[in-house]
Length: 249
Image (cartoon, rainbow, N blue to C red; front, side, top):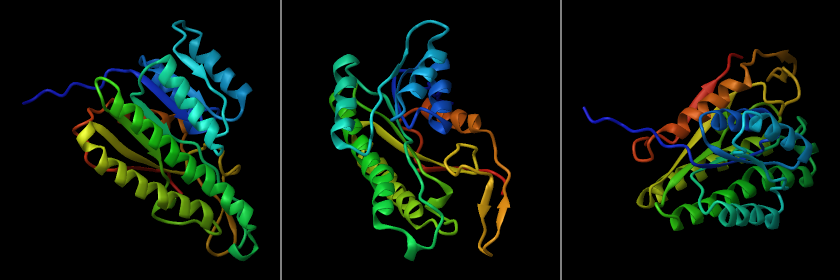
């Protein structure tokens, strides 16, 4: 039987890394030897995470505060990575947000656009810049993990902007997985259901009958471990684009 050598930890970029799934993924990657660049808007929360990660020495975690809904700030992040590290081996495209749970006819267009700018446009630009780096570096290649959602397949009540954005991420994942093959760039998607990431702000979720009901959640660290597992897989062996982890609900 042919032995499969896991990926050697390299340079990883985690977006939305100040809390929730992003923070847990960054910590998990760092513990096994990855150099991790953490990106989010909240500078204080990022620096707290980096301080925790670097307590054991090594200084392999770094905070780069940025608003990913602003194209220039995204480009600045990747320019810093290119200049200071010379390569990128892993992008965890995680930053995202939801909208208010109100009927679609009451939702201001500005709220819809805000969700799409972060969840879709920013994810696209991050993937685009990651691919550019991964193609140009030597040896070329790398992995992109997109944080999808069960909402990429099944919507929640009053969640049109978020659900639309996650369907778009599924399309992006499939395109990147196909287009990246020739350059040793793998792309896969993590579809989390009911992790206590804080994005919904409560364990009570609106149900189709109009009532709110508490739903059980699993610890966000399990999601971080899932990212770590996916990141460790050889680039040429994983053909599936999605990897659902569904909480009880």
